[in-house]
Image (cartoon, rainbow over all chains, first blue to last red; front, top):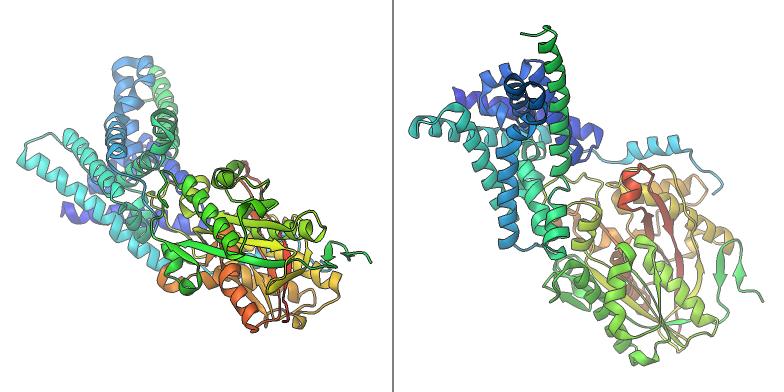
Amino acid sequence: MEYVKAFFVGGLICVIVQIFMDHTKLQPGRIMVLLVISGVLLGALGIYEKIEAFAGCGATVPLSGFGFSLWKGMKEAVDQHGFLGLFEGGFTAAAVGTSAALIFSYLASLIFQPKMKQ
Amino acid sequence: MRHEPTKQEYSQMVEEMTPKHNSLLNCIRAFFVGGAFCLLGEMIKQTMMKVFDISKKDALLYVTIELVLLSVILTGFNLYGKITKFGGAGGLVPITGFANSVASPAIEYQKEGQVFGIGVKIFTIAGPVILYGIFSAFLAGICYFLGTQWGWIG
Amino acid sequence: MSQMRGKSSIVFEKAPYLLGWSSIVAQKEGEGPLGDLFDEVIEDPFFGEETWEMAEGHFMRQAAMLAIKKAGLAKEEIRYAFAGDLLEQNTATSYGLKELEIPLFGLFGACSTAGESLSLASMMVAAGYATHALATASSHIGSAEKQFRFPLEYGNQRPQSATWTVTGSGAFIVSREKGPVKITGITTGKIVDYGMKDPMNMGACMAPAAAQVIYQHFQDYGKEPKDYDAIYTGDLGEVGKDILIRLLKENGYDISEVHGDCGLEIYENETQDTHSGGSGCACSAVVLASMLMRRLISGYWKKILFVPTGALMSKTSFNEGESVCGIAHAVLLEREEA
């Protein structure tokens, strides 16, 4: 059942974004930014938590989930360190995703060559 | 010319004459491609939790790492672009799309050098995501911080 | 008698000839409907170079050398070169042509560069400042995507109105010596801005410029569409073609019978997945140097108007929210009767 929920909710988020893309002509970069911001916002409002509880990876794998984890990290950091946490939480929460992307991508740049578009 | 449409008339005319993406088909594809990535994530998560007895919090981090790795490899073989071309938002929205946006400039710009090529351009698309992610979390954090200080929350 | 005609056209008293021409393309273009008509199809997209930019330069150099050879000339006999590409600071042109050591005028007219370079080369030759001049333009999908859009490995969905940048280069030797085709006149386009902002719909950005210059040509020459065997625009694609025909119809000229678009000739849009057709400086240049020249020489056509179209924009102007303006240059080509 968890699998069905993850598939369904994850797919649904993508459909919402697809409709948005087809109707606004927004470039992918802006779409990604909007997704992360909406994840943070929905996280702060306590909504995303419920989606995650229901859908598991269907909510955390989309980029909005990245935004949600940024919020979670921020909240924990503020709880622990107060004011200092404001400058700590974001990067702590983003650490794994960002580092993985940067590290693997750098390695990829050593291995792979640019290729022609087909 | 003798008769020229105004900018507004012209933009209306272009709107009429430009064919649209088949949005329903796009949505179906986005649903299945995006859903598949999330399903894969869920499978990794469950495996990590059950087989390796890892906490849910850590399992989610493993999901991120493994999906990012998968996406970077697909990008290297020039396959991720095909997934997004087919799946649209289904390829763009999952964390794999974020990884693709980091890996593609890293590979493309290696010819422009380690620092100003890869180093700078690797953030071309991902940079804004990180900046606005961190900044919006910061703003939300301020509200939360002030809220707890003044006893509105918790 | 004055060679100036109307508001922005020239009728050459001594029309210069096209003595040699060449078209060099990459694999995808070679697999398209015009594949057999190109002089060379280069399978390696890097053309033996390290980067997309140098590869594009190599395409241009190769095309230039072949055109010179086909004209039966040596590069020392070419007095001027008029050349341009899509990249910042004309990177491909500068690095591609430096070895040829031909005095150069570097041009930027976006995808209309083939028309701009032919116009200037023919003016130069007709005025007696050169016996032979080279006109060339190039584009490369690798360098163009990298500069204007995304890294090539990045995934995104291209809308139906998007075009595909042609990889290759076309070159022409404009000369006082007699050749099979002559340039009898030109009409120079002005910048036309109808406020379009969608860089994925270039056809709509450029169609008004094409309409403007074709309209001006008819006015200056006192001609009608039926006086031409064909009117070929550069890279308007499906969307732009329809808009152009409609804009001119509203101004009393129906070109639907004679109009063609180079961007719609070069690929099989359905099977090659190129959406709205080909684009780029090379698009109009290689189609002229292959299909259009052949039809002129064979006598299938006697007189055509060649109108490459360009979108004047940069990544900076786009980010700053400016609209994409268009420009187009018309070149009148006629078969030289033997």
